[in-house]
Image (cartoon, rainbow, N blue to C red; front, side, top):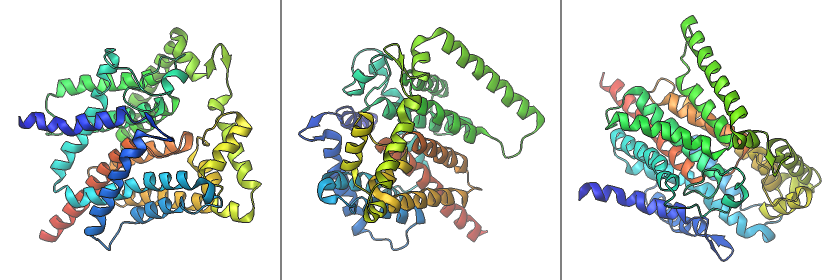
Length: 398
């Protein structure tokens, strides 16, 4: 009975994510259920005040609050509030997790369990038991992409990639909390296969970047260099074989839809230029505070024919939140890096740095906030902070 109860949170989470794309009036189910989560986290953090906050948490709060102040907030107020809540989830979850998870071992179980859950969630879709509820299922129908329980292919790719890297890191160190290691290796292979099936180049890039930072040794010797080159050669040959033998893979890599090649990078350069143009042609006030989400999306639609964001967080922030938004975002990235770098002697440093650069590659090619990725980042960074506290205690006793 106890083992069955452990599954309850995962079942609830699966339902919340799976039905997240369902429209309820002007908003999605995902946006609705995050409101009570936001209120709960606010309540928990406020009633247990902690005056000493990490730099990355301060920058996170500042970045979130900036969404409430734009030049056209009267028009974009709804989207501004939605983004404020979305951006607040990460720092609030961090503070809640840090205060309520009592040990590293318990945190490890939660982190590993969540990674395993993300990969296992693909099974009912692979077997044809369930079908995706995402609108992306139609836009990516040419590629027959894996979406699973997520709202779009990018969400599936980003979250599965992070889950695979975390499972890989636990297998790499031979963690004692992993039961049935052979099954977990099979799960790892299945997860990598799901990443491939998303046909999302951002996910491929994130996976490569994450693996490099996870396994790259501090000092390279000749044998390691040759081994790395051999692996690179094998991967290169595999990539070439896929291009030559798999039409779907070829079409996605080179952006070919309905027999025609689209703009490079799925039109990303056009999106970046449109966002910059909106910012550059604005008033001084708009250049500093931004045009807001609504104006950015409408301008994108006028320029590209697609109501999308800039597919790069720097350009999205520039158009939506102006120079202040870019400054807060850069400050947030620097604070994340400093948080990890100052803990480079700790066991989870490599995993945390891999997650950071994975996140950075995502921000360069996609941008936005991703709830499942937030959970992973919170758990990894809290673990790193726990290790720092534990090390201080051990040094004190010595």
